[in-house]
Length: 280
Ligand SMILES: C[S@@+](CC[C@H](N)C(=O)[O-])C[C@H]1O[C@@H](n2cnc3c(N)ncnc32)[C@H](O)[C@@H]1O
Image (cartoon, rainbow, N blue to C red):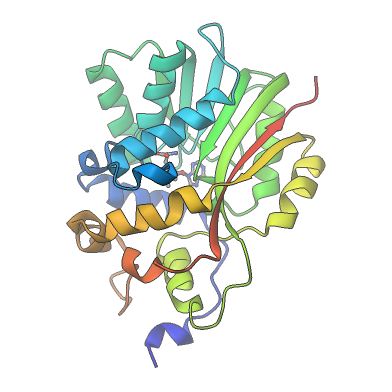
């Protein structure tokens, strides 16, 4: 039996540890992923489109749900190295403020935006999403691409986002969730992923009650798993970035580390696109 079977339960994420993980990942060559740090989105007929392109497509799908233009201010919660924020600013003309718990990501994102001539339209700031350093009602929309699963309490984050959104403003996010109970033989691969990336999986039935308690109105929930998860892990498992380089970022003590290939066939591991709105 593999040693991963003896792993203790996946702990609640600690933001500072997540920040250090992303500091280490920022040292890797993110050009291979086009700067995005999230899944791609594929149509059934275009399975082979590169991850870089498919990842931008997911950003665009989410952006289209924000209802924004050049008059609006957008908050990007968990902004990575800024690729989604820059793409949103270019496509819509909106002003985007990105926050990350990783100091190194904020440094890299700021450099990349300046190099792209977007310094006036996007800005990046180190902050914890659990306590957003912004005034009430200060953004027209918020996006959170694959970031809330790293946070200790999704409901608290939703509540903070609601506070900083203006009435009528939208939140669009993607998250990982347990689509169906994960069978015992697939649990080690999933636990390894959750542990190495310091994440928790949501339960699908929790989203609407969490949003309601946070003061947000539910708008839409899309299970995008079939268009995103397998294709991303397949492409990652074919690159050194997925299998070797990335492992240098994880816990050196661990005898087994995250492997994208180990996630192939884990159909219970789901990805969701969720839209909510602050009541007008
Ligand atoms: C998987 S990356 C996604 C980055 C970006 N959204 C993208 O799609 O390229 C997760 C991001 O969430 C951020 N994050 C995680 N926990 C956070 C927290 N408590 N506060 C702020 N950012 C956080 C990480 O620093 C990282 O930027």
